[in-house]
Amino acid sequence: MSSTTYIKEAELTSFEQRGKYTVGVVNCERIGVLHACLFANAGFKVICADANPVMVENISRGKVFFLKNEVEPIIRKHLNEGTIKVTNDLKIAVSQSEIVIVAVPASVNEKGKVDYSNFERALKQVGSNIRKGTLITIISMVKIGATETVLRETLEVVSGIKAGLDFFLAYSPILFPERQTLETLANYKRTVAALDKNSLEIASAVLGTITKAGVVKTDNIKAAEALTIFEAMHEYANKALANEFAFYCEKTGVDYLKVQSLAKANASTTISQPTISCENGSEAVYAFLEDAENLNLKLKVSEAATETNAEVLKHAVGSIRDALKSCGKTLRRAKILIMGASQTPNAIDIPKNSLKKLTEMLETKGAKINIYDPYLPSRTSMELKHASLKKSLTEAVESVDCIVILTGHDQFKRLNLRKMKLIAKMPAAIVDFECAIDPNKAEAEGFLYRGLGRGVWTK
View 1 (cartoon, rainbow, N blue to C red):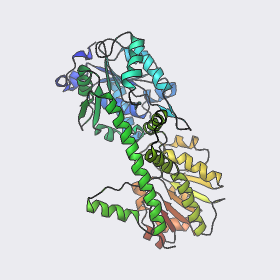
View 2: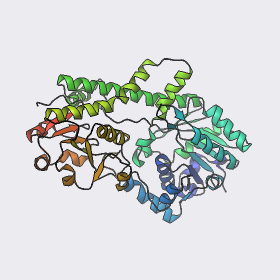
View 3: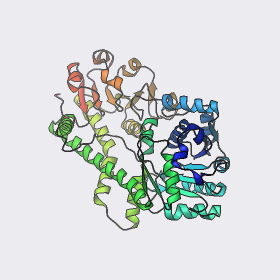
View 4: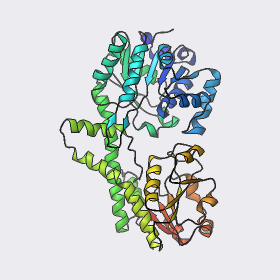
């Protein structure tokens, strides 16, 4: 087998050259599979490894539960050509690969504590099976300082060989991996960090083959680790501020969308879109707060931002309750339709994190929940204990008291509200969390309208 020791960017310019190398992807969840697709498209051989036998079985048959229309044709193509293989034997994947991508995510428990146990177990298996000359690239988020200490030491102790001399170690994290698609990942500007020059150059050359946006190199791994965490926290803070602006707009009759439009025209500032999404799985944010707590630092802005975003679902339930009240109805025994639940607009994808939590909160208040989303996989119904998944819009809208827009698919922007009011239980409300519906058109058809940041209703 070829050794990655001598990989240079000039040697990776053709499919034929890349085909000499095998990429082992450790973890077959979303970000791992997306990387596998991109590397296979770039000409590499790929082995995906995951301990979950059900996941391995599904992928080996070309089946995934996210971005199905986008990912499944690529997976099937490369499975048929033999350029992608899938196994639950991590030893095989690592020992037969010159390049190893570690995509095992950390998890966050209900108390906001980050759990690295799965990541650490996978890293020990990687270390046990790597050969000299292997490039190991960590794409999962880790705590600041972890790559140079815990990760490096784990690999060296288990393998008995040295990073930078016998194998190559790099760090190139992906921010908010749960959001990524093939398109966004292919256009993701990669930050690549490593302790030594060879590792940095090799990893940059390899990752440069799967991104159109280029690579930023650094020999300061701590700075790269901090960048990911700071970017995540910065977005959380912007989201919290946008949500607070939206709450203010609702109370004062200001239309948030008009404010955004003026901001874009003025070009003096960028105002983020408010959202009721609750990405509590963002390990970067919670790792940052946990580290600060261990260092006895009080990060007031970061903590407040996280608390504000955690409260947004309560605001959503309150908006639904108030809209029903204005229709002369109560949340208890109300029939509520949630339209749009797929994580990615206009794509067959897994449900938003907020879907399950929102349905549970509404059900606890006594509401009956239906869900309609043409982009939601049918298997989702098995996961929704508090809601019924409807196959047709007509069936979904029949006799509903409130329609909630959770994901703004393009087709929802073209709804026939006149037809919908004939089968809904009027007076009915539309609570629009994605700004998909024109408030004037909704109210012209007799619906009571409420929207996140849309303080524009008349009823």
